[in-house]
Image (tube, rainbow, N blue to C red; front, side, top):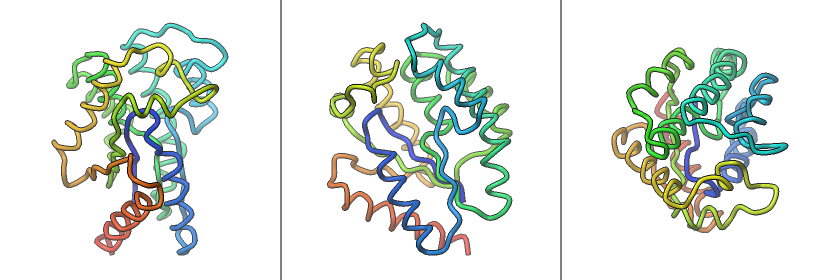
Length: 207
């Protein structure tokens, strides 16, 4: 099974992914966790450009979309497809829906054009289950501080992040069978329990 976590910056995806992965591994499942951008040697170099590590480099939204998908293509080929082929559960900290939310809803690029780029980069691979950790954009940004802040937190205004958050909600509403929207402001343990219930149900349905 391929599971992706999506949501605005600061929504707590990494924390919940760690909790879910630990639970599944304790149950005897092989779990592979990946992050975007990155996850491969080439992807990590692209990540440094995209997230502004080591100094912010201005990037046009179209270049953003292409670079994210270049990293994604390598991740799918090198990590995701081989893991799924051997029966592992793959959990991704962001996947293609982030391109639609950030470069589409956030930066205003045409969604159809972005979807075409995504299809090429992923060879059509789509998550089986997507968990949206929904959070007010301002609240999420307030959670991020210091070295944890990237080019997207530092260089984009509040209106951009509000459009991104709204975009995620629109994507979830359009595909309710794949997406589950969760309140990321909930207590951490309560949110983890909700995620566990959803994932266990999805895994049971595939047997």
